[in-house]
Length: 444
Ligand SMILES: [Zn+2]
Image (cartoon, rainbow, N blue to C red; front, side, top):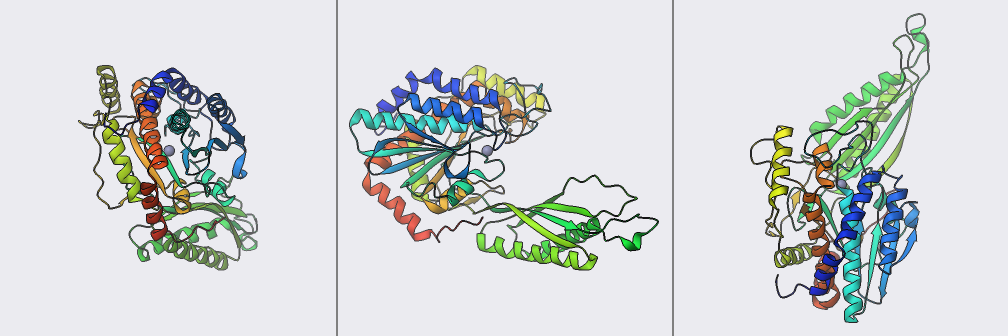
């Protein structure tokens, strides 16, 4: 361990190891879907209260959101935690598939994520108290990340702006210091309304909402040529019980549209709305739409990424043991992964001062537009294991996931302490944010 690693934090984590791992296991067992995380939120609340935090429930307009606070005065350092599960990804911690396809599961490892961030907050607050340091630690429990909603709604209701900096992590296949940007995204449902009629006896009386939907989707597919390369457009039909012998009066599509820059996304989405209007005009139907989510892209803070890299290198990696390597090998073999996919990452990436663009989206990006934010990755699975898979769910309650959890909690807590105790560092972080931020305005 490097000289700047705080031993009080390290010992706190070692001494509370069973409790930490127990909470992650408990939330893994609940596997509650977005906006249904009642038991998971209650477990996190009880956990943080036991460490002396004052916990508010239902903050920011989300019933299963939490705000937990300990300490007082400046700086105010925040930790972001998630705890929602995904449909149909139930899987116990064994290296072959034996889940219940009907049940939700932690295929994105949010049981580790929420626990790791809450534990980092607890460890930092404990170290601050022991050393008599001024400063406030805030843990935001953020539900419904998987539907890109929790932090967006919370941000729109004033959460996060009290923070001087926000720290978060996500379980993954590798250890990365956070130079990753996720795409801005809109989730929007289009509903066309026509007139029903017998499709064979009186088709001239009908106005088909399904025709309108098909024409809209064709228009959207022609739109693809005339957008920048970073734009992603994907859609699915909305559930409807249609029969060929009735002209469908109700039909529609659910779109996700993404781009690196919010301004570009706004332009593409406005053109998509025109396409929907055009399809309605062509078919004598009407159209309306509802935005389920509208989010920003990530504002990367390189100063925070460099801090995370330093801390990760100084704390180091505890190394995966033989049992964990055997689990990874068996998982890779049973999944038909290519050779090398079983490797467990014990290394750290080097900050380059450049953004690596991801093709997905996260609501952590909205927080990054409000306050300086970093979102690291910590290896909780072998390299072949993508998020949102039964394989990742298996790792999320395994010793591999637990090792990543304990490391993530230490990386975040140690970085939090440095921000609390090095005013020049925090100033540099805030200056970089102020130089780049364009101003956050709620989109919903
Ligand atoms: Zn996730």
